[in-house]
Image (cartoon, rainbow, N blue to C red; front, side, top):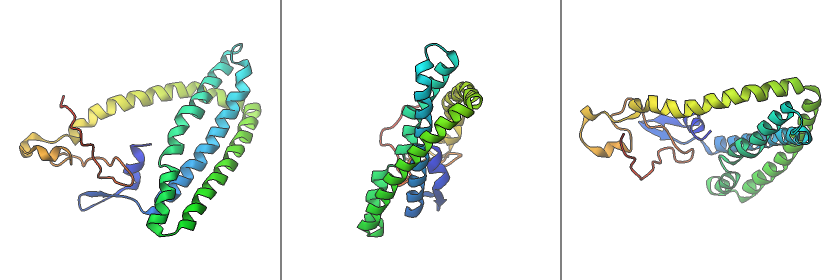
Length: 205
């Protein structure tokens, strides 16, 4: 999420990454939080229904562990990036409207509560009627998550030469931070400030 969203939403003009509009950030924040709270209610409902039988039945233990990971770990990234507080505080500054900022936070809170309750209801229904599909998803998710972990480890190593500074295009080391002389531009690291770069220089391997 932290890597793909800035790349998908930020535009590149005149050699620099440009942040998305304020309206786009607000809609993205609202959609991520509403979708995240729905999924959190969905997986927490499945986790609670599988909890009494997780010690006696292997399938229920697998579903319990998977739903626990989704509801407490994976979805926390979705519901916190970008933050509701940061977007809500940016509305009065960007749009000069304190009431609109308060209305955005209120709609977010009420909508998140309704989506959470909706997710809990859908989770209970799916647990009773779509148990085979839930079990199949949990079994396949172990392989998918393992592949994602390997991709996160191997893809940066494979792509590092394309983002590295070519030594034959100058000896000035000031271009290391901005990616000057590299085959590909430096990726944006933040939605609000896509050109923000860490000040600590990493050692070269």
